[in-house]
View 1: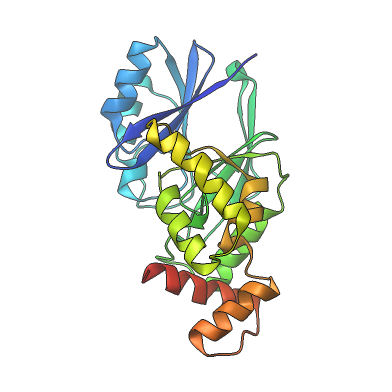
View 2: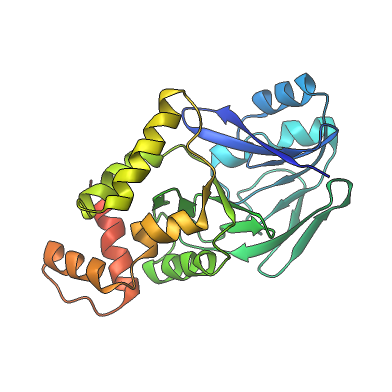
Length: 255
């Protein structure tokens, strides 16, 4: 069975990822119900279920309307801020959509929020706002140690996995990554490919974990060269990868 993965655009820069086989569909983080309903109707798809990574409005505001029409299960972290009828899931749980032959593992990835989770199978990772192409989410609720550990979980997944995050932030993330490491030839090569996609108004996503492991500075917080850059930038001794992550995130927040 061939599963298609399509981004439905929402708001300014959100993607609502839709997995389907031309008959049944699963959607991830539907913040806007109208664009999802339009897509399902246009492609004559039946909604099997919804995956939620965290509680922010642009990820959950479509839940109630979609459930009213489709009465489908919603898998989400245990968080009272998420509306609708939920099946709460946690680290180590497995979610199956038999009609699509899909089976997802749940990872607990606090940092962006305290209850953030991600979903992955052997080929794809749906990581919400934890990991972005060349970046990561803002640290709204968690600690640097939590976020670093969450990214380490994702970093341990196989290189070939495709990374489906929820926002089109790659161009701005590249600007920061290039500022941190201005002489990185791999980043320069990546920019050419990125510009080619965006000039045609194509999504920069999905990325792959291989690309992120090579280029994403937030996955390099244990590396000596980045720690040296941060030590010079903030005039302090770097004693741990967690400290390195916290400083790098602070730098990006004020970039």
